[in-house]
Length: 378
Ligand SMILES: NC(=O)c1ccc[n+]([C@@H]2O[C@H](COP(=O)([O-])OP(=O)(O)OC[C@H]3O[C@@H](n4cnc5c(N)ncnc54)[C@H](OP(=O)(O)O)[C@@H]3O)[C@@H](O)[C@H]2O)c1
Image (cartoon, helix red, strand yellow):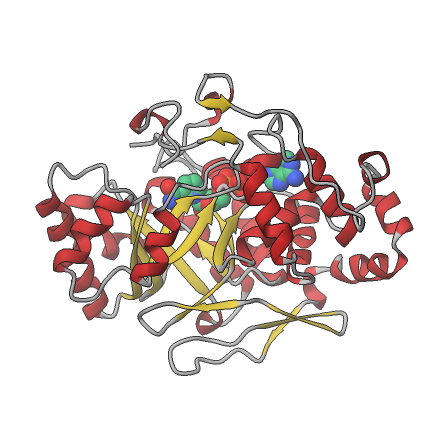
């Protein structure tokens, strides 16, 4: 059950379909050509002084970053990060259950995953998560299977950020047989009395639709108990959602899936829209991390130049501009603050479309590979 976590070897296997790898990139008058776009971070800033001042302001220390104006307002909270006098709004997305979710999240899995639940606390994860929360990542994503809930709990405490100003997610899979027991165990490790979002981590445990439906009833019970404000699923495909929705009284508010330009899942996204299920994306940076060889490199560079950000921030923005929550993670403080620049601009609809179109010419699935054929883009 760690196939979503142990995935890096997928780089060397043939689970990538190289169709149309012609490095095509749309010709755009307003985007400088490749050569110029390959400036270093410093040079980018030099080229665009206006953004340099913004960049400097975003690189403020955690202590000077202040969270304010957050209050529960009829099922959600309003968030503004104030950095050196700049108000950056974390976009919030209202889910079908009436609660809102911050659209940029910080993850405590993948790179942070601990094989052994009983191993000692990972201090670097506590420090990184504390820092992330303090500089504005109020949405923190965890899971029982990562074995890092104690670190997440310690970071929440260390951040000194009031509980109602954080959005905490955890997921169940190891103890899927006993969901009521699993949420209690997770809350204990997190040191919390409730989570903002509780997810079934994956559907592959189920041998039948009835099993999916039974587990969803258990999730509804968790919500009723007040131990989770919102409930949802992760890694569910259309048939899993269809089975779940058949008997759900309180349908899944969100589905957390691997989503990036190289894995757009056919009609799965439009199915979510149709059923009013929100989407959150893990692996959003895949084109600049795991699949650097894909066809988007040049175009991302050019957009990065245009907006004076990095290609990673263009990818985060590509999610946000499609109303998809983006969950990322990094151990590097510099990247944490850099990635908040995704809140400072918007891609044009044409740019979003061009990234999607170019992304569709390539296929890369980093997680759950064993469940899918190599060329399966669903
Ligand atoms: N529901 C699920 O099944 C599932 C599966 C996977 C992940 N998740 C969640 O999603 C979170 C995000 O995971 P992810 O791995 O998928 O996130 P990601 O955003 O695609 O990648 C983050 C990783 O890439 C590295 N990275 C970040 N920026 C980079 C850059 N510009 N160039 C090169 N490397 C860079 C980071 O390492 P550095 O420390 O070096 O920056 C980090 O290890 C997880 O922590 C977890 O909470 C959920």
